[in-house]
Image (cartoon, rainbow, N blue to C red):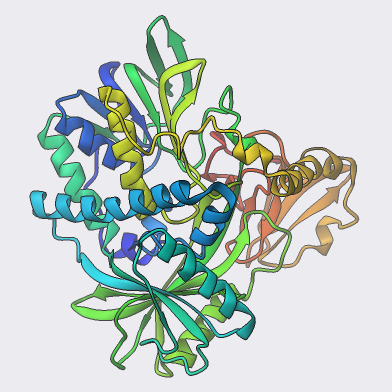
Length: 498
């Protein structure tokens, strides 16, 4: 299922890499972060290339809600109390600056991308969450950021208890914006390559060799701008992050729609914004957050979103359905900066926790400054080598426990289910004559058998009964029912069984 953005705006195509290259900067990953890095670096007369294993913007960046905001949930009271006033202020204003930067790029480059300033709101219908929102407002006031508390919002929801308003946030069409940036990169002699999978990174004296399936790129600097770093060592980011998924729908209604962007602080979580489709304003509803690979029933996720849309607008008609997928660091702060002490001039950007429209610009500015040798006041805030995530013992312990179970304990258990126990359009890990396999049967009974072991680090996979995929609970790799890789950090398809 492709997103509303991808179905309605196909970016132009780019060639695959067919020769060896020498560049100043090689960017691995063609999402909005990689493209934004390419824009700023090419603007500074550096020779750059972007390598994307699939199509530009067709993974996480093309499946977003595309809100450009510094309101990343009820975050600032947590940051204030956990790390202090200056830390919380730096996070807030780095993202506020990103909103201004994006608007300046759009104006400077004349990019038509449906950009609109909108206020952003977090609300609750639960009286038990009122204090949390008041505490958030109090923390923001201490950071000299003006917010308002409201008891009414523009959404047609009658039981709102309280809401917090961020003024002058924004939304846009990410595909149109990305194409505008790509056009600028090409105009400035940058190179973009699609269907070019990176399979290795090697240090050769003071340069790096980026291996693709057919060719080698030699670069002074490397930016790993994939959702999850495709290089495991020595960065060890797989120990400091987990993956989270959610679902979205695009809805048509004849009713007048609201102004603003909204997300609730309740369970389940719902996110709302509007977008332009065929000259008409439609509604985007997101939510149903869950840890990727969780062993839960997801089959009703879209139905819950549809029901919510119908509650708000009874004549709602669903146009598109899709899911999104991102990584979350253990201390809730993205990793942006040097990948490892052992790999100077290699940079990483990850852990955006589904707020990548704003954070992509933060990352692009920070890494551009580092490559150009400039100071950036937010460098320590996002430092990937920080120890805070490891010190978050509760979340680290939970993640290691789940990873250990998927890596080791699951492998010791032989499932009781047999192939005959799998119904049509159903997937399950089964005991097939003493061999553990992942079996999916399509609507006509055709069988697709895989070894249910992630090709990244070997975690046992879980069946996703909504999207008909095999998902990794450890690091978020996802595979089609037939074993074809959809999302990394894995770089290979699953092994299949004849």
